[in-house]
Amino acid sequence: MIRGRVLFVAGMAVTLAAGWAAFPRAIYRRSAQPVNFSHKVHTEKAGQSCEDCHSFREDGSFTGIPSLDKCASCHAAPMGTTAVEKEFIDKYVTPQREPEWRSYAEQPENVWFPHAIHVKRARMKCEACHGNQGTTDTPRVFERDRIGGYPRTTVHAGMPIPLGMNDCVECHRAQGLNHSCLDCHK
Image (tube, rainbow, N blue to C red; front, side, top):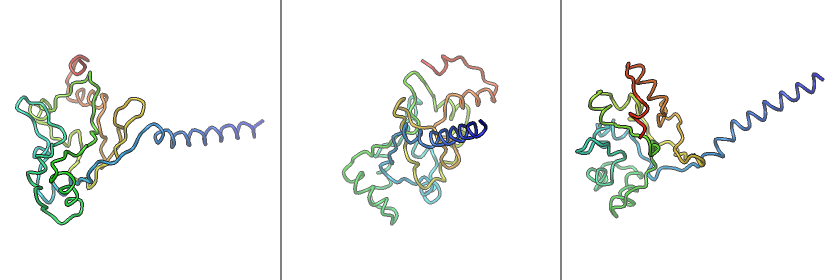
């Protein structure tokens, strides 16, 4: 009787552990970014800040991933000696072909997130939500949920990417801000 229970519990533990390891691999479709981009090279060696590439439009909306024009303004010709930069210029800059970057921070259509209010009015630093992205040498593997269709929230360089609603609510509460659901949800 006891042996049966021990075997049952051991079997359940093995099954749960296998599911815990296998489920994420089954539910998420993995793919690499088109370019092995280094934020570290751009921040440390080139001395750039987040705003140099990720900026706001005239209306205050966030541009998100920079366009090829932004990259080509510095990389019309190689600035360094890396194979990654040469490949980027040959494959994207010279033929003027936009890289098909995968966005880690896609939001549902019914969600409105204003970067400008957080950065300009609240004077938040990008690192407050995105961590020290400037220290990353390679982009993390992109994982898309096969069921919901959204990118996976994971940790990269010690920070969660992308943030979820609970992270926003927790930060707002810590700042003493109270909001209605309709402030963010259309």
